[in-house]
Length: 129
Ligand code: THU
Image 1 (spheres, rainbow, N blue to C red):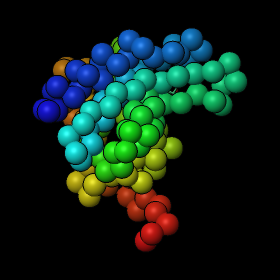
Image 2 (spheres, rainbow, N blue to C red):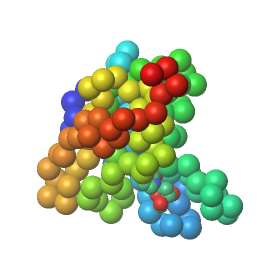
Image 3 (cartoon, protein in one colour):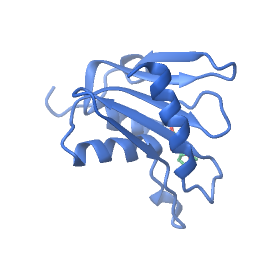
Image 4 (cartoon, rainbow, N blue to C red):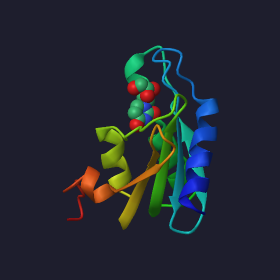
């Protein structure tokens, strides 16, 4: 699974986004350490605080299928451009992230921008540390 393939899956996942309130449709494609890919989209609710981001949708799908080690995630929004994960999602992913976990985005020019989770989420919280 290449980074380009993963971002394409994230872009496709935007199509299922349920975002009638923000109108901001997000898709994610999560690569797990055992080589599986789980996609997700944001799912909003009339009780606004109940909204779930695309990244956490993908992560919860993975964990619920027994995949608890993550290698990388690609994130896209329907309008294009960089979509950095929110703070809650950074912490949520940190829980399951390999040391070299990567966050793959695509900029307005179509160039991939790849970040280490460590640089987006330094000193994340784990009970085991
Ligand atoms: N959202 C995501 O799905 N992922 C992000 O990284 C940022 C925000 C969603 C949450 C909400 O449904 C909408 O985008 C606007 O915040």
